[in-house]
Image (tube, rainbow, N blue to C red; front, side):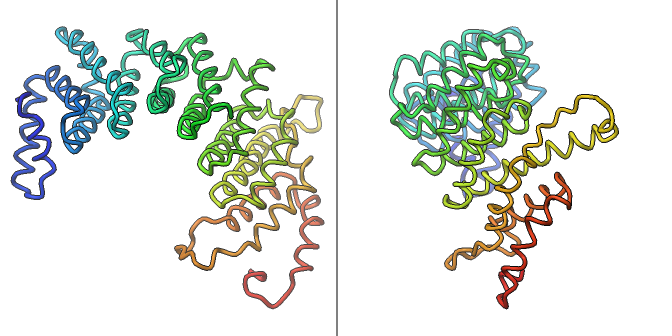
Length: 384
């Protein structure tokens, strides 16, 4: 079966339903009869640059989906003959990641490595994996390898629970991905993969955000990334800020003024996909403060400590005008948006509603009324 797997994988994608069904049945039979050999064969197909892209792609997809199965995860850990097969499978995956000239193959290998890591790392297996991946970056291998490595680290952080990695490995991962985000990294694809990895790794960074030096450096690099000339990097940088606002609200005070400056600029001047993330940051802050204020509602008259920094109230005179401006932004005339599609005006109005809930009528109404009075003109969009 292993010898003919390429043709079977190609047949599994055939237009002819009968051919496709027969190939699917053969793959299922192979898996049930000899799981270790089945997984090893798929990994070998994925790693072989001489095989057709179609068969490699499906081999990687089947392998990834199989490793997502709870039943197979237990089999992976418990079947006696499998350790040798596992070592060969992992060698195939790492070789694909570091040497394949094909982006699809590297991307698929990244995802499969993360699935294996999610199974093994909680059981203290494959301890050398993180060090091996980090060395790909520090050895200054080709940019394609560094990009694939950052993607792999990001997938691992997405799939693995924060309590699985020890602090030493967390520190090494954060140091490496932040280094990859730095503007000194000239390859924009590598920078993007690094910042995406950081986005997934933020939940691991509790100890780092408790230390001023670590936190300051992470925030500096993230804020710098919001000014990148690359649209996608700016977008993910703002997604990082949103994630930080959810997870580390209580650590934001030293940075909030700078964050307001960069978010306001993004809302007013940047591409809509970036502006939406900038607005989302303030919606997230509102939700944090609404939750805190509701939780501690009965303690305002006492001397109890209330962990609210009132970021919305402090930025209110500056934030509200920015949000009001979004209400008048026209959709691009050449853009056919679906009715109800999320756009900057809707994001701004939603955020404005959250701001009102956070600070109350007495503070918000005096800031909004002049806008209403100035824009009382017979134009349907303004009236809306």
